[in-house]
Image (tube, rainbow, N blue to C red):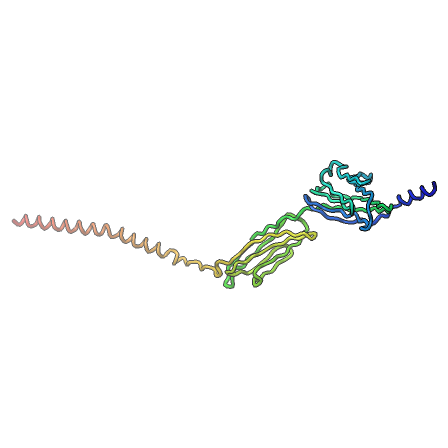
Length: 260
């Protein structure tokens, strides 16, 4: 009897390892490692959550059950060889601590804890043009990279490599372009994840166009107006000369008639 009690106590004394951190992304799948000895042949696997030990997946006597809790129904996959648990279609509610209890056929026992952090994938950043300016050397352009994600780092890639540019921590890039097509990429990164957006830029006019002087701008219009004014002035003069000739002719005829 004493031997049986001692044997039961030995089974109940489990080796608990340190907490392991696992990251997953919303909508993706994540695998929680059991941490068991690869040489073990597992006979019992219990995955649970919460301090009250709510079982979500188990394996015993050759039977596997992954639908023990409704919130995980259809989303769990239990590897009965390694004891690893895969959670599919991650939600925010899956962000918590999980406990796995393993027993092999030799009655070796181990308990591990895994903390799952559910992250959100980074959104593609947005590239906006702050300003641009044409010079004799080419076109200066200033771009800003923004994103709705917090605590991200920005970096830039510019092709071809011959393009001169500078950047700062706020996601601003300034570059001088020429007539060659330039491919500019902004990369945001956080927790070993990256997202990126790209734009193509080209300098179409390397020199600023000179502004026309007021004399040049209005010279043609002024000339046309002057000609029109002269024509208007000449019309009454011409009419007056015609009328004068007619009057003189009539006067001559009257004088000739009187002399007779």
